[in-house]
Length: 117
Image 1 (tube, one colour):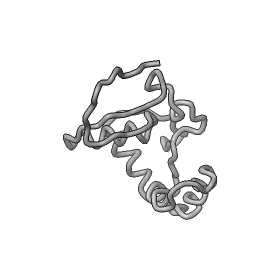
Image 2 (cartoon, rainbow, N blue to C red):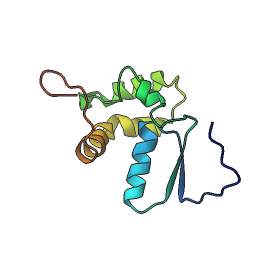
Image 3 (tube, helix red, strand yellow):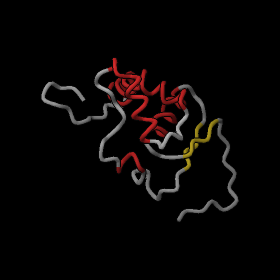
């Protein structure tokens, strides 16, 4: 366990969690010269739930299903998730995955025989 010994860290934004959402947010903020600190309980950044996810990331092939997709996300989160954020993910998540993770960061994902995620 790593413990800071009375060291003071200053930042504009504190992100709690080193999963794909937290690191994506840190990446986007840092591109705009915003000072970011990512706090995680993991000993290594790869020790996060995103890395353990058996189903991968949230991505809907058929964007016409956004209402059903929102309901699926809410159910997966035991209906504790913020509905406004869930709707944002359901309607714009694919765009974020493509623009940030695939196009900017060149992260490779498994695809089907047609090349779709």
